[in-house]
Length: 389
Image 1 (spheres, helix red, strand yellow):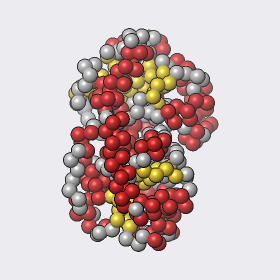
Image 2 (image 1 turned 30 degrees about the vertical axis):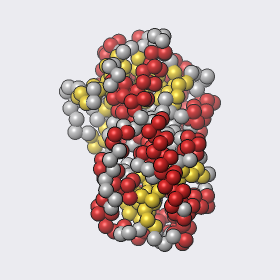
Image 3 (image 1 turned 90 degrees about the horizontal axis):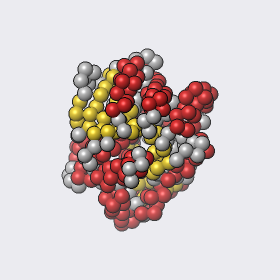
Image 4 (image 1 turned 90 degrees about the vertical axis):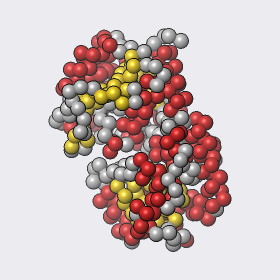
């Protein structure tokens, strides 16, 4: 098969969607298929240092980058649009990532024109919490093109049953497939030695580390995490909060304001974005991983924590929560500070249970979330949609 992915941007600052797109493309390419990704060179207000003249082959996948143009917030790129119109007939099936963006408008329209089947991956945008944000602007786009895109899709691709259930009121009974995100297990088999993260950030000393790793964003529940940490600190004065991740929208100022209000700045370390071994070192030294999001269509950082044997505390709005609870890999709480503080205290107070949860998490990832297995599921989904199985 020839498979095309189209996504607005791939810069690491954009978090899970970018990473998931690359990894799923590589997983299917590893099964002998030709896979390409068309995207822009957008990297916040800057651009990625990538070639716009010729494609890049990486991990068996062809990457083609096109210049971002104003208005950037919409992922606009007329060269990208021209390339899609020119090249689409070369592909058997197209995978469109995210909604309400320029590439989504163009790709859906061209696919229908040339009768190339396409899959839409909403990346959580059809969760009611996000669906209601900027409703007027989104409603205009729905009337102009998005409803037509959804109705014309061969399928919508969800990463959990929960995501598919939440999206059901907005998809006009369009068919759905559930194929999760994954990890390359080999990358997590050999972690940095204990203390490697502490040497990078000596200000944490010997404190017990509570780790948040992800984008600093309105949906992540920092307004819950800060008071919950403050409450937990009273019972466990040796804990320290690590906030690791990019601050794309200046939201970190608001987070620091809450920390200042609760007098927690000296008990918190902002690391910025961590990658590679530095990220693994943070997981290795963490007592627990916390993600109290108001919405999270999957949460790759949760998988990473589980793969590293770290017990997790997540809200019941993180769509992988049922799997975590069923495997005994962590604690699931509602989106309110009291329950979050209680769960953090449980893990801090009972290290044997926390260790068992960490082991269960590793088993959950190893058995269900390896890209090698997920690549096969994606391959089968594509073949089924093409009527070849």
